[in-house]
Amino acid sequence: MFDFILNMLSDYYLWIKAVHIMAVISWMAGLFYLPRLFVYHTRVEVGGDQDQLFQLMELKLLRIIMRPAMVVTWVFGLALVFTPGVISWEYIWVWVKALSVIAMTGFHQTLAKHIRQFAQGENKRGESFFRKINEVPTILMLVIVIMVIVRPF
Image (cartoon, rainbow, N blue to C red; front, side, top):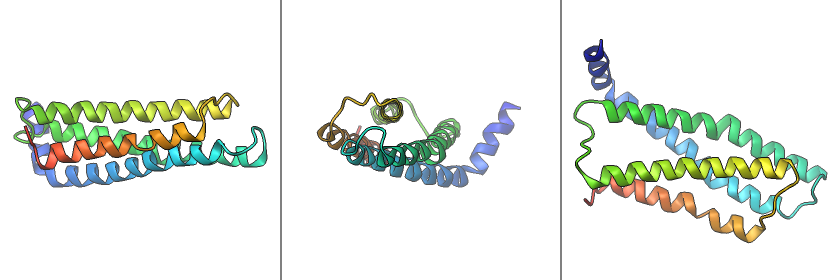
């Protein structure tokens, strides 16, 4: 049975890789956009119509786009990891990439926490904070792409 799965992973490698890349693009779009929504959300009155609109937009972005894309990214990324001959854990680049993906997932969870805080009227962060953290997914994406494509070490 295990050999069957490994053979299937090898046979469908390019499809698995394509789905993984599409999921990553969708997830990254949300990770780039959600902190920007938070920047604008900090400017509105708590409890007002705009606050309610931002809460709805943020929650839908998280639940309909970001979370499913993250799950698909992880599932198909792990499928790539388990495909025979694709990954060798003896290289440092693999570990840096893996840690960066874990950090990206942690950032995703942090954004989900901020959505809950906005929904409860308990956001204590200002526009400047959200402008700064908006750069986190960009930095992680740069590290991940360089590790996968250039494989510097």
